[in-house]
Image (cartoon, rainbow over all chains, first blue to last red; front, side, top):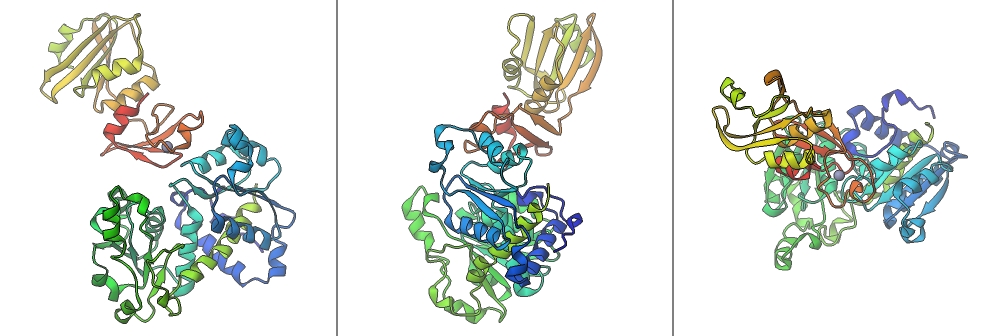
Length: 312
Length: 151
Ligand SMILES: [Zn+2]
């Protein structure tokens, strides 16, 4: 596959804040092409290349998705899935681990518990680095697969009306997604959260003017207008007072009844895993897009690996 | 610095920092780590037409480096830097905010890689309101967080 790298300006994939609209569109288009490609053809794309998969903290879903993508492209995968197995435990710095790994790999995929670790790794490494999650900071491939899911389902992202539901205060997934969506044309965002879990002011400020924003604590107010509802988990650890958590956790459970008040093309997304935010009775309806969303991680990660793995 | 103030200048050669936010003079002394080589005079919470109240710092025999000036810009916005030669103001400039600083601010995020490994911090600075954003963890610090984290 010919790669027109002129449309992709990044040497690493570290933060969604580094992406221009054309960088995002490039990855989404590549993902479409890869999804349609026969596996034999795909297998040749990174044949002979080595992808280092460095998971300094466990994240089985993300790791399997990346490693499957790498293998689909014919790359060899080396690495670890838990920092206990490595010299990090003996006190080696991240910088030194990266300097060692870049000698025998062509691309580095890493997840690390410290914020900013991926940016640091990219500074040290001559080989491209892909951030698979750095602490509570960034997880750009999640955002790209969310965008890909919308584009694949609706044919475009421009003009979509997208609700974000649940923990909008601490959820980095919705922060990054809101920033990314604001770069498309005429997107309307609906922030639906209880007062104490509202979207932080700095995110709303960063995108204000580029996107129409409406906010409410009430889901039903916006339901009939939405194309997509992006649900998130409300995490117990966020609450100092367990009673407060008990009071809030069940406020936004999505049941089949809500589908009577939505558009026919209405879709529900969720980064998974879910606890009880989406009732399982929705799984069998056309509104359930979350399993497809998870599967979309493969072509999106293939697109990123293929783009960076053929560079440097 | 008004002409009235110049006559008060207790130094003949060196640096006067004027229009300092009240409360920043002691912090500036702490940051400049001047030791005992220089004669230093402070004016704290003095009246000023422009700010209402201000601090002033007079340092005999000292010219500030670019990095030192950046620190002052971050903790006392709007400060004026006067170079004194032969008891006259030889040069007077409002201190500009730098676009970025390296190694000047400690990141406030305890989970940031810069607090775990010995890496020089890198912050980009924006104005109105004053903010410093960590290049690594992307955490943004506000004015009072910056004041307490300049090192
Ligand atoms: Zn930081």
